[in-house]
Amino acid sequence: MKRIIGIVLVSIGCTNGLLAQQDPHFTQFFENTLFVNPAYAGSKDVLNVTGLHREQWVGFAGRPVSSTLSVHSPLSYRSVGLGLTMVNDHNGPVDQTMFYGDFSYSLKFKNKGKLAFGIKGGFNLVNVGSASLEATDQNDLNLLRDVRNNVNPNFGFGIYYHTPVWFAGVSTPKLLEQSYDGSKTNVEKRHYFANVGGVITVSNAWKIRPMAQAKFTTGAPLSLDASVAGIYNDRFYIGGLYRLDAAFGAFVQYQITSQFKLGFATDFGTQEIRNYNYGTFEVMGSYDFIFRKTGVRSPRYF
Image 1: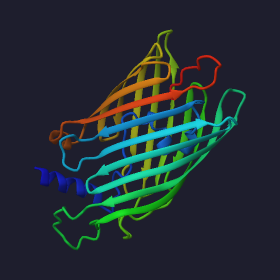
Image 2 (image 1 turned 180 degrees about the vertical axis):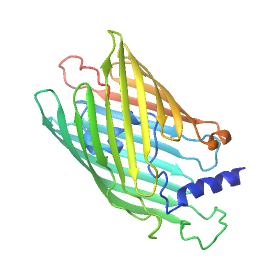
Image 3 (image 1 turned 90 degrees about the vertical axis):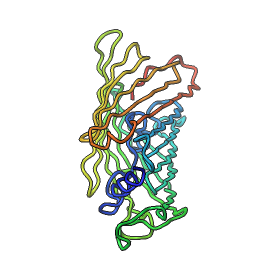
């Protein structure tokens, strides 16, 4: 069974030159906006540190395992935001470790809206261990070569508009289509992201927060995540997610203090592969460092 699973995973990765999932998915994608859009840097008006860890298809050999850590803050000149994103993604024979710095500049409007423009730059450290793979065709040009510490520099940009009650953004975090292994077939494809969401007050105790994220890339189907959460007393979050033609998800989060939030999520696959694994699980932690002595800040929902 493990051998069959390995073949399935490599087929997913190598068909058409790695045009399937290259960047990791997250059920709590709304907690990881800086990863895809540098214009998000500084938008929370505090120094924020957020970590996410995802175990996908537990029980599969070579399953996707992804971890991210993001740090961002506005500067004293509050139109400028800086951020740092670190990602480790293991998927079959491919290990990627990404380090990116983010810069944003915001224009402010009288309606309390802000339009931010952002750029990101950094590199992707790639390791490919394909020696253990069993190929049916040794001359398959899409089969990755063994690679150790291949450094792929890259940069991207984004636009993010937000008010206290809704937001929208577009971005492409990696503009350069770099090769994983020096070939012309196994490359990092350029991805385009679009995000939108908001918060609706239902009563004194309850709010509803719908969100969506779309991802486009050449040679792969549209990836669309739609999420909705109920928020009770600005502390308890419970919600669900639908990933187009792929999965349903559920998550709970709790604002333990005004600065620290903890979350847990799980996915339920809609494809046949769901019958051969124990599910997908994800944990999240987020902390706001508040240095200004101007009272408690207003709750932030995105």
